[in-house]
Image 1 (cartoon, rainbow, N blue to C red):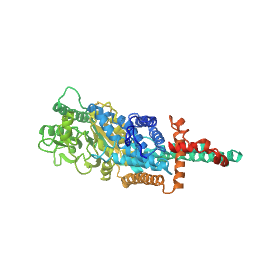
Image 2: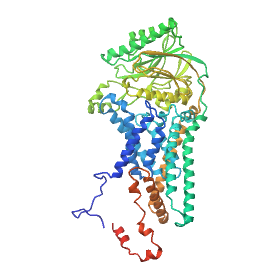
Image 3: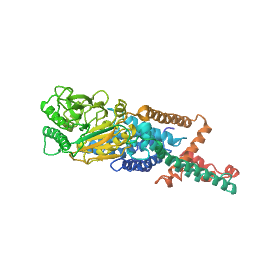
Image 4: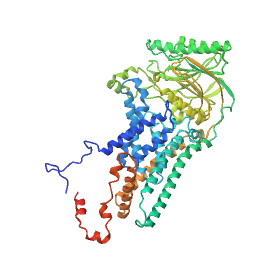
Length: 611
């Protein structure tokens, strides 16, 4: 008989409850907290052990849950993580941080479904670690080219996991961190399951011996998993990293001119930025003439060191040429270039600028930024969004992407050059290094994000790339932080924020390629396919079992799952009491002997069916 409402009509199914259950609220709160705490692993705090521990914590929440409940946990975990991670976007005004945080947290909904589906399967730690890689792979590519910030690997610029980057890049490090965390959680599950397993053969001495043996086996399995979780980062020490002393010496100077933020209109500020970088270059030239500094082989300006187009403005061209002539070596100049006659579209360009006079002097080879930042460097759906959100009208022009790879020759030195946020994208950096770059240059403009910690997050990514590609890495920023990083990820010199300063250091060139350079994106593809495939297959198996393909198998699998779920929930604060009071059947029925069961009335069973 169909359910009826109070008026006697058919009762409609309620898809949304008016009030969420207490269990859902607890799960959401714990997931939100775990996501927020995960940010402590990233710069500027940089407590790297927090990453595997928070992976273990959220794995505890996913354990034994349904796909729908996993989606809830994933969303709130992603919300806690992303809203804190992208707090630097608050500089763009109300709504920017919240909007990006919400969009990025949506990626964790399918991630949560998949994590829940594989949580109680065999080899669950392996499948879950692969799913972390899959989530980051999608988030780094789609939509609008993706947003690669906040990957687990980028929280590990100087941890025992870091050397693994030279073997499999960021995907392998994310996998290793996640696997360590999931193994830790699984060890707790196995230990508690074995401790609670009833003795074999009743309550006699034999049963007690069997229980002790069962517990001993569980303790050994748990210990093995803990050891495995610890051995994964220890394995990083076995990876040989490139020595900082190997290679041909090369002296590079980085120019940080600083960006004024107050008292200027747009055109005045653009002129001031250019003047600051020209003056700092001339200060370097003066110190060289005075014997206070050693003349470098090359000089690097930051991204947008000139916000004015030297191709169309003769005054800008003359000013830069004078600074390059003063220092007397090739300079890599970052400039904003008009992409069309109206000036509505622009290019973010690096220009190899050679001192003169003579043939070959002036502007030479270029690289235009290929991976642009949506809503930062260009506005998707401009015609629609500017009508809905008036603040977007303050973005008067869009950058357009360039083409090609950042492999330039600066003087006689092949360099790999990526611009600012491009350092977070595996393929952009790898292609530049594989193009022949012997040092990695990261010209950046983080002036809008001073005081938010964003520039230190980018520095951590640059340090990670130094290890991944075995290259000396140099980041030149307009207002900070500029830094010199050796191939082991160690920062040897750096500036502060809001400083006008140059860094002049001897580094080493390298022509060797790491294993990560050679294997490319294959590790990421492998991990992602394995993780997603495991989730889909296990979800199909679960549907087949629940559909009653075999009644006996179905009842057995359901009972085992229910038992495991109760034990898992008992490990989580807030669920211990309720989980322990959810038996498969009434306790008095399970304890009856066969004659007693035959004589017992059937009222309780009938009432259960009626309910």
